[in-house]
Image (cartoon, rainbow, N blue to C red; front, side, top):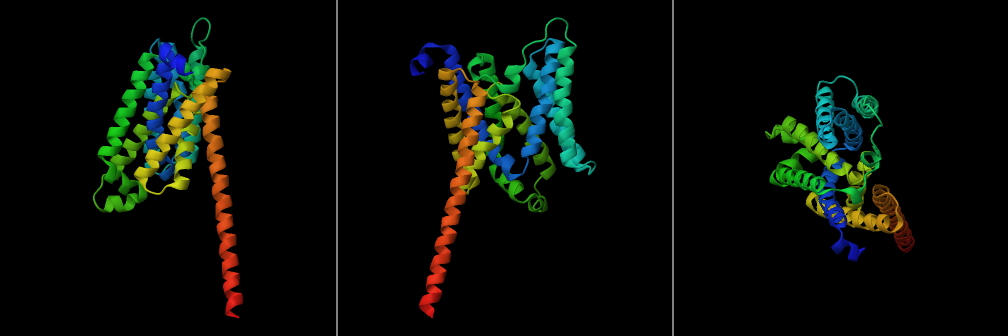
Length: 287
């Protein structure tokens, strides 16, 4: 694989795309988990499929259509949620299913043979073009700048939005800004792991990092490092076996995350047993 990396442009694009996407997942994934927006992120991701289908129907770049649909669904859910209408989970489910249905509907309206949509659903990091790479890098740069320039304000908003509102933080602005960068992050991941698998990539590395780190900044760094490791390892598996790159990346991410939860649970159980034995020994000595 290393020799191919220096010889082939598509391998260089794939490695760089994995790196930029990993930075994005490391930062946004931690925020998504902290604000309990996992299902909303999944709804936004699946709603963007309607934009992909519309892009094909109108003859424009499908990713541009995905950006429009992702942002529209993010603002739509946010606005309806703030008005206190239908329950948030109902809205997310509607955007989730309707977005996918619209994608299929728009493609069905196209004359001739329908295009292959599998790369948008499951990703293909080996097929990332230079234009895709520039898009992923641009979105990553914008999101990182937004997060780190407003880092202190983000911390206040994430941990206690009511307190942030009391001290004068524009919490409504931060809510819509967060939904916007989640939508953009989802679009950036479409070419890497696909719409269906994007949710796992956003959450698995961040969830793993949260088990072993505490500070917000530290968790973001560790999450980004883990995500990079998963991306490059999945890319290697895909290169040598021919397995879908998105599936390989997400399988590795999920397996490590589940294993980490298991190790953490076993460690906690051993600590409890040791504490119980120590307590029992102290009582016997006291008698």
